[in-house]
Image (cartoon, rainbow, N blue to C red; front, side):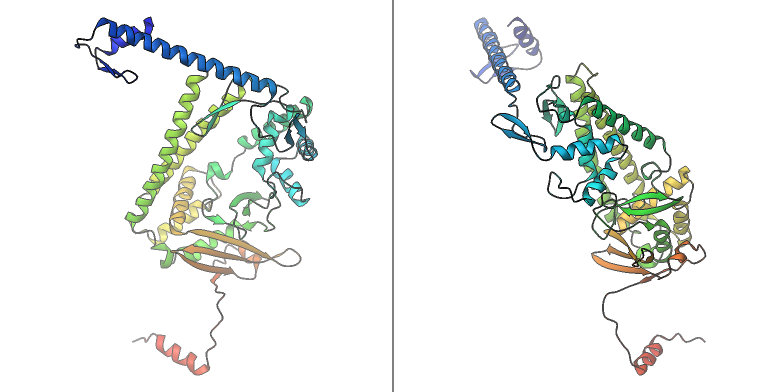
Length: 453
C-alpha cells in the first residue's frame, strides 16, 4: 500500500486521478479529506491482492494441467488424444522414415518429392510440401517435449522450460541429433554459396511468374545455365520440367520492347499510388514485428533459451527483409516520369541478364522486376516436351490489363541457345483461323499497301 500511495501522490502533481470503482476524484488542490486517500490506498491494496490471488489460482490450474498432460487437446499428427493420454497412430512409421531419410543426407525437398511420388498420405490429406517436412525435422515434439507458449500479435513466445515426456517419444536422441547436424551443414553450405536468386535477384519473374499448374516459378542452376522451374517439381507435385532463362530474355527483347507493353508504365500516377499502398502495408508489418521483438526482449531475461533466440532471429530477419522490400518499392516509384528509349530498356535487359553480379547488374534486375510487376497481372511459362522428353517448344500466357495474351516459341529448341537468332517467339491464339479467298487477300493487301512517291 505504501508504494501505491507514493505513486498516487506523485501523479497528483501533474494530473487529477479518478477511481472508477467508487467514483472519487483526487487532485493536488482539492479539498479531499485525508481519509479519502487512505480509502484509495486500501482499494488499490485490495485490488492488488485479488490480482495476486487470481494469478496463483491460474498458475495452480496450469500446473495441474501439466501434471495431468491436459494443457491442450490438439496433438501432433502422429499421435491421437485418448482418455488415457496420447497414443501413437499409423503415421508414426511415416515420421520415423522421414527422420531416417534425413539422417541419410536427403533434404526436405528430396524427402517431399519421394513421399509424393509414393503417394504417402500427408497430415492434410493433400500432397506433402517442403515446409511441413522442415518443421517436422526441427520439432522436438518427436522427443516427447512440449513447449508452452503465449501468443501476442500472432507471435508465440515460450513460457518457462519445455515439459519433458509430455508426449510419447517416437524418435531417439541420437537420430534427432544426427538429423540436426545434417540440416545445419546444408544450411551453412547454402549460406556460403554465391549466385542465389535472393542475393543477386536473378529471378526477375519471382513475383508474377507462374507455372501452368498455378505454382510459382523458382530459379535453378544446371550445368552453368539458369532455368525457371515450378516449385512443385521439387516435391513431385508438378511434372513440368525446367525452362531456359534464355527463352524469357529473348521474349523480353522481342515483345516487351514493343509499344504495346513498353509504353504501359510511362504514366506514374496510378502506379505510384499502388506502390504507396504496398509500402504502407509493409510498414505496418514492420511495426508489428518491431513491437513483437521489443516485447520478447522485455519479458525474457534469459536469452540463452534456443526457442527464444530462434524467434528473435526470425523477427530480426523479417525486419531486414521488410526494409529491403520498402527500398525496392521506393526505387521503383517514378519509373514512368521519363519515357525510356528503346536503347535504354534494351541496355537494362542486357545488364539484368548478364552473367556478372556487380551492383549495376543487381540494380538492373530489381528495376526490371519492378517494371514487369507493374505491367503484368501474371506471367505463365510452360514447356512442352515430345514423347522422348525433348523440348518441342515453350508457351507463354500472360495477364495484361485484364486481358490474356499468348505466345509460342518456334519448334526448334536449339535456336534458344543460338545468340544470333533473336526472334524465336510469335503471338499465338487458340481462336480458329479465318480463311480468306484469293480475292479477299488481294483486297486486304491493297487496303494496307503503302504507296511510295
